[in-house]
Amino acid sequence: MELDSLLSLVDRAQEMARRYDATYFEVRAQLDVSDGLFMRNGVVEAFSLDSTSGISVRMLVNGGLGFASTNRPDSLSSMIEEAYKNALAASKVGKKVALSRESFGRAEFSSPYRADPMEVPVDEKVEYMKSIDSPAAERGIAARVLWLLSSRSVVHFVNSEGAEVKGDVRRVTLMVRLTHISGAGATQEFTQPGGSGGWEIVDGWRLDEKVAYLSDSMKERLEKGVPAPRGVKVDVIVGPQVAGLIAHESTGHPYEADRILGREAAQAGESFVKPYMLGQRIGSPAVTVIDDPTIPGSYGFYLYDHEGVRARPRALMREGLINEFLHNRETAAEMGVSSNAAARANRFDREPIVRMANTYIAPGDVSVEELIEGVSEGVYLKRFMEWNIDDRRYNQRYVGSEAYAIRGGRLAEPVLNPVLEVTTPAFYSSVDAVAKDLEFEAATCGKGDPGQGVPVWTGGPSVRLRGVGLGGT
Image 1 (spheres, rainbow, N blue to C red):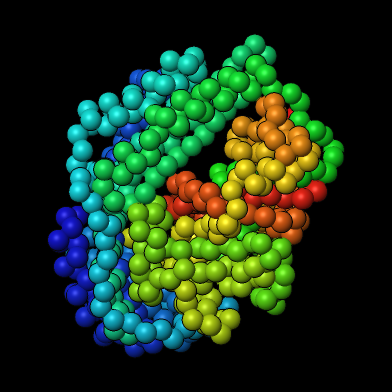
Image 2 (cartoon, one colour):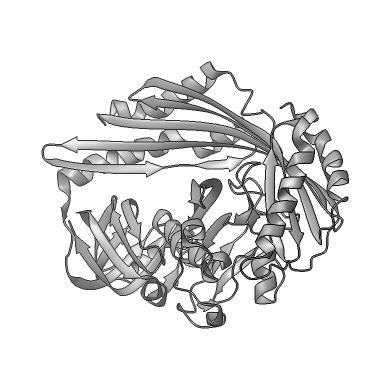
């Protein structure tokens, strides 16, 4: 469906919705387009082009919430009738739904750009990818996978309470995965810069330099690396890439209010966090974790969510205390608070659910060198190549890629595959210092049934942990 034609349906749909005796209704038109290039070992193997567009409506009737969608302009009436019937049916089963009271108005937002990433010629994108692949190929990295994705998401949202929000965000990201094999040993590296805006943002990544650095690091660790300490408690410093993943997985996900309230696990997942834990200490005073959709140029950028609520930074953990959960209007009403604009849907035919945006451990005021100087014996786990965490987001495991021994406050030889195994409270409680080297990487966060992948940033600085368990493979 063409964009102008799609957006013109919003007024028609809300006029139709007003004819029903719904307590509340909302209409959302959404267009999502993307193109992707997949390169393996310097050869483009696939080009993808994806486009979805349509319109949806949600209605609240007698405490039941109903949803329906269509991508056919001639079926608006039947779509709205379906949403109404679904709401009526929902009102007869389960607990009643209420929505938090919010202030609404008219607003527009977009991601500024100079060169639309969707309009950049394919040949130019291929040449850019080859320039990133080349440093690794020149260093003998045999397995190299690159995936470049450009996208645009346009949303027009209105509701019966006076909201009218228009958003238009362009994004670009490049995922790089490298595998190096030497004799019987193998190691991997992964990096994914990304952001909102135009094609011009790729120049700031300096990804060719980073790929060269990662390639050299992979070769060095296989040639000179020593086995990691196993079954011991040591001081560990984790780098920004590791800290960012931990912030996302062990704070962002378990602080999603739909998980906390026990919404169907297949749709929302589970959480070790309970509503009564607000204000409880879970980490040291050195740790603050933020989720902020409003960061300009971020991959998870938006200024209003898909329920028309204005976004703001959300301090999930403040100085080690559980401070705030991620809410949509439904979970906010159930917990007696206002929504903090965490409702997102990845396409028109998906209902908005509670999602993260840009989740990160807030930086401190010391240098990485000062963190290292404070460790007499330990390991610097700078980057990871493998991780897993249970569905409650409590027990977790991170396998290091680039890692070094620390002796007498100085970095020593590379360490092979150190494994950090820790619970969420144990990790955050063991933090005694946080550096100022905040970095972000892009990701696609998966959640929901049917599944929804949304763009996010994971971020953090280097973080020092005292006396945590370390293993090795």
